[in-house]
Length: 271
Image 1 (cartoon, rainbow, N blue to C red):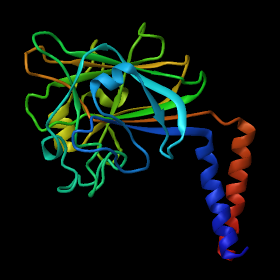
Image 2: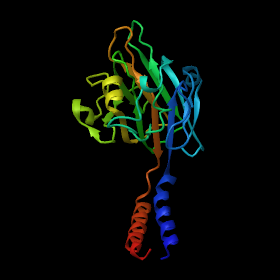
Image 3: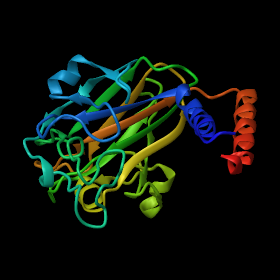
Image 4: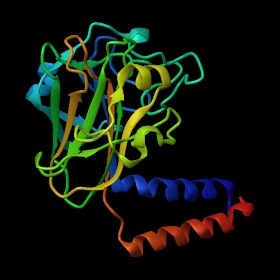
């Protein structure tokens, strides 16, 4: 096989899986700027904008039919940005996590919305609509703020309109599952769970929250944040979010793809 034809075949094999779903990136606040690494970002400029609902584009700038709105609680846009929120270009975690920041781009990671605590426990719920029953969903959340008063926050999601809630796992900056505090089991829940701290976990170590391989049982997904500390002045940060939704390929298609890939690998020496 000619070199160009081989390269094209390999690219086709890699591109096939992307046709099965969409990747959506969301930047909460444009105080620092709009955008981030990895393609088109949906920048929610103000909490008022998300209250009204925002239609989401995928990383290629194509409308997905998915929307997000704030349906409960309260969020505030912070005037703090950049290194006061997230340091992207120095230290052992520079450029990580790669889906939210790079060594030259802090626009999505470096500004935030946060929960309004006041004298009660702050909470906020976001609802994603336009999803497809049976699709598989993954979600990553960056929560970071350079402030010791950034309290531990609980992060939960619901597939049934808020009747039941499940927690997220926590990943290290490089995407490896973090097992401390039981986080590897997805226990960032209010009831009997372990909170994620926007300062010690998010800002200091660039950890982020993740859930993967969730099969959608309805057309909506709810994301809820709770402040773990009830003291006035404490809050939970929400910087950036990545949502990946894809159909499950039929078994026959999977075998065909694996067979095609194996054939290409066997022929690779001839390229």
